[in-house]
Image (cartoon, rainbow, N blue to C red; front, side, top):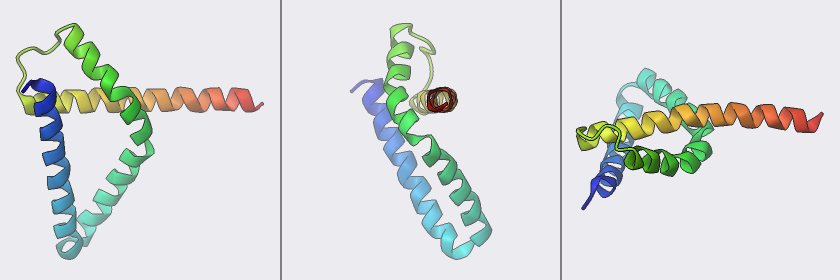
Length: 103
């Protein structure tokens, strides 16, 4: 069991916890549900780019041995954060290219 399998397990547990909180909040805290909905919409907007780029982020981090002393949870947040940052940049580049091509 390496860092990648632990990160995948940690990611699945994190997503499960977020889903459980959302289900609970939907009944008990409607305002929090609206915040979750906006957050999920934003994440969904970039989900394809995150899916495409997260493996590259993991490989580069492991290849150059960045952040060697982080815990599994910290690894998860670093990988997720970098993936979203690069996904937003990739999405912006894609939109720009689509605009230039369609002219």
